[in-house]
Image (cartoon, helix red, strand yellow):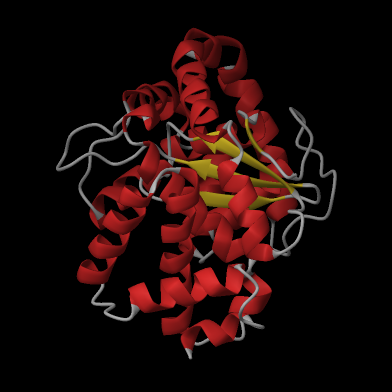
Length: 288
């Protein structure tokens, strides 16, 4: 059976630190005013004097030109640590190999791996332990296998992201591993984010939403956008039922149905249940 591992990848963690020195935190606040994790503040303070570094200028330019966070993080995890020599084909982007090499310079110039990260290791390990406790029973991985009707490849690794981006998960792809960088649950109002352990159902729902859509991308490409959205929420509801309990599943359904004006969501969820049981031939049948 497939498993979901929890790990900290220093290549991806370095990109979060470069983002902390970039224009990203201010742009993110323009999207939605929010408090960030205390470690994000500490990281931003540590790297502020490197805001004109080549790696930071490169990420600002890339984001301004429409390069996605997924492409940037995917670039990093396809390189070796700490030299950032490409170990597999990088995303097809202008200047991307040059930017990857600038990450090695950023790591060397800041000495972040030798001085800063070790001083804050406890907060990272606390996050790893919390996520491990949530996913160690294998229920989410087992549900995703039922959903895709095949063993999951590549390996799935969830990494706590205590820095940036603070509002959205990011998927990074390599040949053998799919990395999901997961920020802590956003708190109500402008309070700091909650620890992962404070809201396991939210964590499970977020992970299922991200992974279900990615793992089923080929099948979803055949659907209309409204159907795609219904599938995403129906899959999340059934994942919560399998990995947490029926109460959380129903609470999610009611909340999403009302907030997104999706009166058909409960019916589609029941049709998806039939699809998982083998009673429907294709994914499109859940909408009939």
